[in-house]
Length: 343
Image 1 (cartoon, one colour):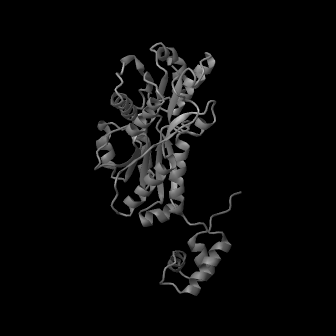
Image 2 (cartoon, rainbow, N blue to C red; image 1 turned 135 degrees about the vertical axis):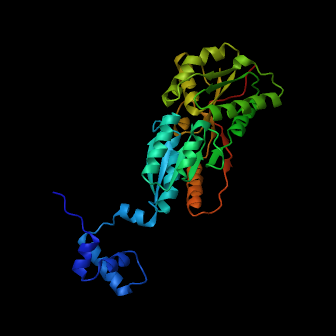
């Protein structure tokens, strides 16, 4: 049987003081003497008193809770981002409520509105898909919002954001492959991350152009897909491997690590040696990238730092301090999945 919860009134009755005195003592009010505060706090612990977080939040107009919207718990990229969010929030004594959007803008908006109804103090959104048609609904909530690697273009007067420089990351990857002597380099992208795919594709194209390589349309494949399934990434390589190979490419820059790993798996299935016959580069540097064979060369996103900065921005917003948006620099991690072109 559940024991009845101890209330402030119960403590006041045992201590022989007023309800107000107990309430002030538990809040460390200087209006109550140090000895009385210590006595009431000790008595509360002995009686098993647990503060009512809901009542306290109504009184303080703050719940010390943040809502975090992610695309999917299945996405291996997000574990470190969530870790970064949680580390900063924990130090600030904030709790995190987690919701998933499945890359669906209507579902994302529904989660945001649910968080608002639960009176979270602020909302962090990873890979947001909010389109301009949702801007009025988002603005009406009047709640601090920070986007992490957003896939949407939301006015800066509604939200703040932190992201990684996708364009520069793609340039780093392709420039390195070019330095190894490759000139026929493919791009395998995805359609269900429109903003980052567009920037990475442009970085790939501009790196080839700067090196004097004439880009051929057939080198670029942006795989169609739904907006809801992250798991589609693992089938992209199997589907498009031979379409790429038939164009004469010797290397492929992939939209992310899961696409690159799917390409590695497809090569293994069909007896194509990596990197001897095909060099492969990914993007993200998820944990699996260093575990596959051969280990994957990839563009590293500072994932934990993304979570750290986004959460610190949110805390600054809640303190009414000035906040600037951030673009973080990626880093190329060279491993075994690429090799110099052998003519």
